[in-house]
Amino acid sequence: MERKLINLAGLTGVISLISYAVAVIFAPSAFPGYNWMAQAVSDLSAETAPSRLLWNQLSAAYNVCSPVCMMCVSIYVSDKKVSTKLFRLGIYLFAVMNWISAIGYRMFPLADSGKEIGTFQEKMHIAVTIAVVLLSIVSLTILIVSGFKKNGMKGIGVWASIALAMMFVGAIGKSAVSPDYFGIVERFSVFAAVGFNAVLGVYLLNGFGKG
Image 1 (cartoon, rainbow, N blue to C red):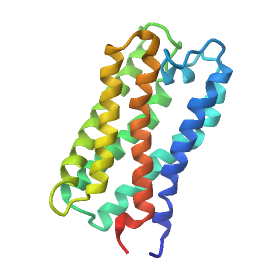
Image 2: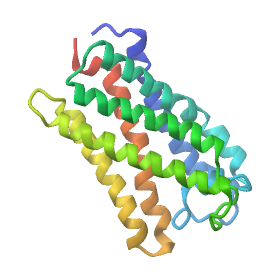
Image 3: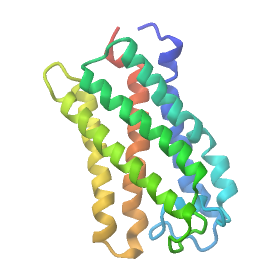
């Protein structure tokens, strides 16, 4: 197929995933005593975290590319009337989630890594997280339902199912496992959305299967 500029924008989804993964893997090197198995990813970008500068540098592409990718996906599926209205609604809601995540976490980072949630800023951080999680669950559920319907995009339905399962593993695991392993199950949740964003980017790059 002949790829247009908006199709090439799908690469931003892949770049976003790579940037985020690199930040998660290497930012702890600037945080003495950080235990990735027990601590949340958000601890790395907390205002008082020694790894904050390195995190911001490594995740810079993620912060920009993630919402850009979803905006381009939304524009493409709307313009080309890809699949059904229900499918497109799921895409739009996932895009909204990305924007809330990109703006909300920058506005309200955790004040202290690994500490009790007490300040207004920290409570807003939790509020942003709740909004992100709820929108993710709703949008992924819609994409699963629409994907497995007749003439739906089954491939995206399968990927959405995997992403949603990872989110539930993270959500259930946080209360089911020992605090010593909180960081492990939490990473299932955070990588679910970023990974699915990259999947949609690849679909955009390939014109959602159209020639």
